[in-house]
Image (cartoon, rainbow, N blue to C red):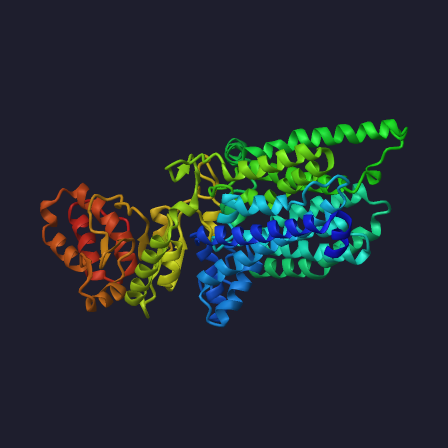
Length: 581
């Protein structure tokens, strides 16, 4: 293939192209590696994978089936690595860069093919791959521990297969790729549906092609979906309900989209380029006297990739805006970012002179490097966070060390913890008997299905109340800033060496096990109660009643201590105010 192109366009141009392609891959891998990090949310999938490998099933807590992940295929791959004792952190980073490199290669070969058809080539430039290798956030999410890079690869591969598909088997392959995308992330169905629209519009006699495209979904995706529905019991993953995907959140979605496009302002340039291309296309049909019989299937080969990419971008962008975007800057736009650059690359080749080709190519690459950093020195803009600045290597190492230390304290105990606010990796390393994500309801169906009175930060709007934590018999709550209880009795603090937590439910069988660790510091509540009871007659009855309500949820519901509890009951009877137990 390279030799044929070299004969047509000159060997020197091909050599330059491959030098630039090599630089794109080299710079990209170095860039992605320098920005590599592991997002806190990745540790949800890691715990699911660990439990699967340990024989508990694809669950967050043993015996409790909740679909708290949205990346089935990614989680299975991580589990496969863990089965061979590979640490999921470096594994996820490595896999992310592999799929990232695969995406660059896809567009390098696609650029070569489309440059070949340029009748007036000056240089053969892999613009899309070069721009992606320099795109800061595309490189950020080359890793992150999440499925973003793999999902982007599948979307890109499916797109490129479809725009070149001629034989029926090619439509089958494309359908299989999109099945992999849908099994990687549920929103892959949007690209699948977009492709169906494209095939119906552009293909003459499309029925056979659509059938071949649908076959992988019928053979693979439908059985998978039926399995997950029977296993978890809900139509959508639990995170769909936890993040209120069914509710429109347009104001926040627009802010999220504008933040991305203000950062990468050159992507707006796709609009005038498409307008010029469409105008020239229609003018050509007029001149040829074919205006009345114009059909999109007769458009040039350049039109089909632009059309499909535009459908992908349009539908997916509307979806992002409708759901309110994400709290992670740029992440949701990563899967369609290659398509933006690819459209621009095709349009530059098609409609620009040699001079403007070079000018616009240089502008696109330069503006990608000189992005408009909307964050400055801040971690967030409104509800949107630049995650890579927060989850640094020192942060990860500290949470890992703290988690492994807590694991030593909790080993063999039926400890039930709740957590929130960037504590997912801590809990992964703690590996407690039971864990409840309490900030969004990602791993709990009751929290996930709460009704929202008001909208807030996307994905963090459904937190657990103190009463719910008590109902779930939670022992400890881990958050960046532990709150005091509703009672003003400050007895809930516990320190595992330097790690602070809050006691939600004081269970004697668990708390007494910490006596062997002198560096675990907390108020021994039975002693506290004995001291309180000895002074109770000097305390106003109303105050005792309030304190007793707290004591019940904090201690008595977790322990069979009728002797101490009956003391309170007797006190209320003697005071003439019977206590309803």
